[in-house]
Length: 468
Image (cartoon, rainbow, N blue to C red; front, top):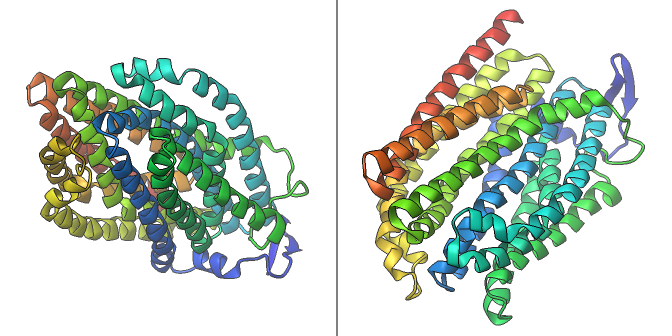
């Protein structure tokens, strides 16, 4: 297989390093690519989400205060994940577009730039977050459980570099069509985490800090495997090495042009979570935050297939855009939205039917048993908005894949800070429906935001096709 260092200059890729199957998949039938790339990611993300739920179950055994403490750290953790996923989205977009354009050298260079950015951000952010965890959670309204939240959060923030690196590494593998290998390490991290949590929380007597250390240890193991693949075995399509690096401002702009808006989208979700937590505390107390924290983990579990499909959309759409095959973008968008809605309808029905049984999982201890009816009510409400998620999430992925990070960000601002926040406040506070009103506000805002995203994406794709 050949690629180019610059237009018209072919360069041989060493045997065993071309990942020809993954590249052929990206450049072939987009429907087939979406299905094949989504499958491994669904499995991996299901395991990751299972870990999140299992983690919440073990933490719930420490009481509702511990569960709420995790809820107060969750918005900050979402920001960290957002930075990692944002950088991943940026590098995946750049790599897939350059693969589509058959420019391997530029793809390698983008990957090395992403790793360097990861190291710089880790150094800049880790120490301040550890030092100011206490004041931050107190500002968020943690009150008397600030100590528990701080204990948990400081350990989480210690693993900043691991969180960022693994997210970027997963994105590099997905960008070159190697979803299976990404699945292996993501699954291994989740399984190891589930094993470590009860041992550290209860057997070792570490309490809530044990849950955080379980995550850190699992990320260390996974990072070692990823480093082995990239720097020792060296059998990926993208090459990470000093020789592959050439400082390029355009590459930085391309990565950050998608990565910063994508990261900021997660920051917006964190701001929304803080806002929702504040509304819940004001209308129903900290128990409402515990209910929302437990229930939202189930919601995230339910939408895992949609997130997995959206990650495949980023790679497939990016390769199509790089190859200037714009008609494929319409196929990618239409098929991914349709597939997502079909899956969502099934998940909605299952969630509604088994809401009470699911709620029991989080309320097995005497200290949290009183939360069961409200967690079940939350799940029965939230399942109605699942089918409205695909139009928004798939449209955002198309914009990110084609380098239009700001368009995706604008859509996220409209959805989170305008529609969801507005309707949650309107229904929960102004109209006096309390925490149930806040839940329905999230539902209403998501529907409106997703509809606007879908229409905008269709118009954008039509313009690309018309302009050729």
